[in-house]
Image (cartoon, rainbow, N blue to C red):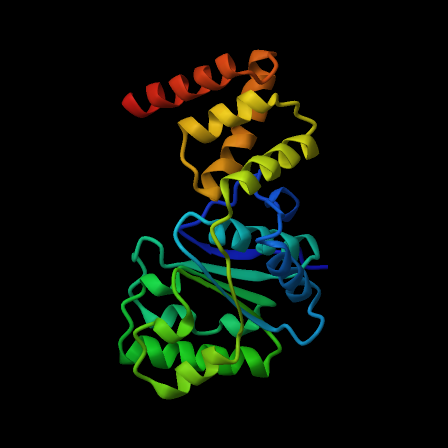
Length: 241
């Protein structure tokens, strides 16, 4: 039996990334249900377009879904335009031969006739081959700078959801729940300190919870404000070297 595999471009799938670790709250509940439908390929959810502001967790969710497909033994291709390093549309050729194609930050791509035709062909061949597509973007598909009407029409038929910015109260409660799922015990004042002294981007907060888990094990200490400060200091030191 073939092992599940993925085609990666400029991507490292970190161990802590998981759909189970993603924050579920009132603001994200419907999206998580829709994403699970996409993973199970139920309700006709074949192509998915996820958009939202930077830092709300789009690409974390994209990586999480990729991991779920790999766990099922399926093959995936994952392409990111986050750093705009990919220049050749020919890269999209043949991707219909995997089970699912992930396109991260499609809004960062400088669309031109060649890229538009390449994406149009990708969507058509994937639909014919029953290959799933999952795109992420900082804007809805209708706001992408696309001049090819047929491509815009194809994107309009994707199941589309905006991943919203969750409130500070939701972040607090969801981070507490995320920590408990990992078997971590946080005092409320420690979580409040974290929210007040670090990035409030959802993706950064999720990563920080995993970093604290590892750091507390290394130091053999409970997670307290002094330990959080120690982690912050160690990160600053590593950036200076």
